[in-house]
Length: 552
Image (cartoon, rainbow, N blue to C red):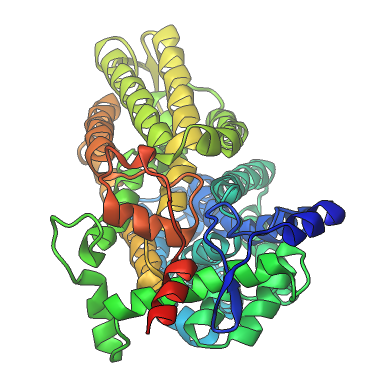
């Protein structure tokens, strides 16, 4: 392989220079060939998704644990109350919202990799506090612990996407960033397995073991990142070309003097200078204000990109997927039709895990925009079917069964209809996991120019967690038996929102497949979302900069 690379470099056309770096006019030669080393480095960074997934998954089962209910409420309580459930679930998302907002500034100051490592340390502190739940005021411990851990998860969820988008080769960037979503699904599955294995314990280990396991994820990610290079685009933004060269050479598995490294770095530097002319350096407040500059009707304005990133993550939450993973256990228990609700939850998580890798292929074969369109269509069909079956013959129709010596049980009138609903929920998860799950994360890492990228990704991630919080807060009141008691009707809400996601994608989401981050900027400047898939790059930023320098 090295001989072929050397031969290509030898036969390459003569090139201009930008800041002493080799520049090329060939839009296909702006990156080094993809190596296994590049795959492995980028894939390891995606391990951060375990944090997100595990924290989303373990609380579902813990809330149904008998010993946890007794500790947080009172001995013999039937379940954790709606208000406490809402607080415990949503407080993590509240922490992650603020963590994601802060992380953008921190990442520009100390670097992408060190921000993620700092997030791991904050996460560990939050886990320690959660571990003391059961002593003193159990509710206060779990809430404060999840709030602090949430700040750490906010750091990680925003900056891992930023880091991966900036280091991944363009031809496989979508597939590798989709690995982040894959790790989220693995985290949810591991949480379900661990909760299922500890649910029958009669002491506090029933919930402390699921909480304690979180230490492992922080140690693996934080420890592993110590040995990986930081983003070359971060070093370019800081003006440290030597460090950027060293970082890029390590990431691409090439020698620092390789023409491939010189060409790719020249393109990054030229684009950064071009963007700096449009978005000049300013004060801290001014740099945040830059995210909201430009016209709403200009597809390439910073304001439009910020709205696109934040609304895309909002739409991902609007699909209702976290309703399944946060509240599936108590919701299915309330129907009385399912004898083993933990097992059904496990089936959902397994579908989630094994559906996500499909996106590794489809996101590069068909593109981001295409899978988001078809994913939204598949999800809305499933949601409406679940709702219609439920209100006619399924979840919503139960009868009371008197069990001597126990509380009266509610059983569904039509078990087959309930099973059909569960099947369509599983199909919905398939569509989400293979499209919107990874697709939203991929796009937000690609659409922002370098001067505002860290803050843009931070704002977009914060939007995800803001809506995650809102949904976590309102859902218990929507489906709680003493509140909205919507039962299956809640799926009409999710189906309507999935319909909104379909329309939104058609009009607003561009196609970024196969483009470098620098080419995405140019594409959004020259085309519209509906025609973006046809756009092809014709020149490089580096060659334009070299020509401009030559004419001065």
